Image 1 (tube, rainbow, N blue to C red):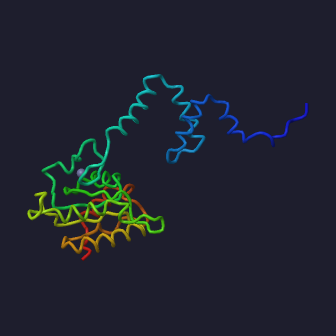
Image 2: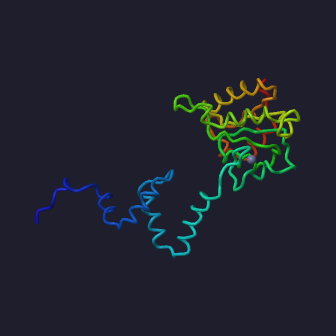
Image 3: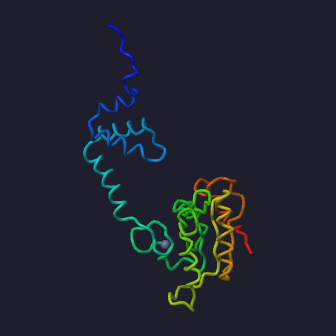
Length: 225
Ligand SMILES: [Zn+2]
């Protein structure tokens, strides 16, 4: 029998996909939207879910639902939390006069793991990126300025005065640009602005730096005045 030309057929992987029940195709499609998950990995994960018992599969599904229903951002520092205010902002033992600015919650976690910093944080939720159209209003810059300006005994908040803002942005071109912008904005408020010591690999990320390097960066922080 003459072999049929492949021309009228879709690519093999798509063809295989089309043979799955709709629910399986939907699961593969959702999984393939996850970062770092290609279509083959998504297919493998979907089969893992199909093979697992009902309890395990539901535990995964419930954990996803719960994290979306209960976890939000601290109204003070924008760290992840499951209440109004995160456990760090809520801790009276911490130094409320110091605020360390990071790009993402995972940078905060990396710095917390050093155990070397006892102040508070402020999560920017990104960094300035003019080429991508990310400006100050797309980040939590306004909230940071309000937080510094609104602190101290002269304010309504009654919170301790912020004496130092430590800039802990990632050592990238955009991170550096964001740090310079913040130093200029915060400098107008009369607060001391410092930045984590150099020593973090350029172009790298706080998230992946080892604890000793991060601890040195915190201890050796330098004034930007
Ligand atoms: Zn907080």
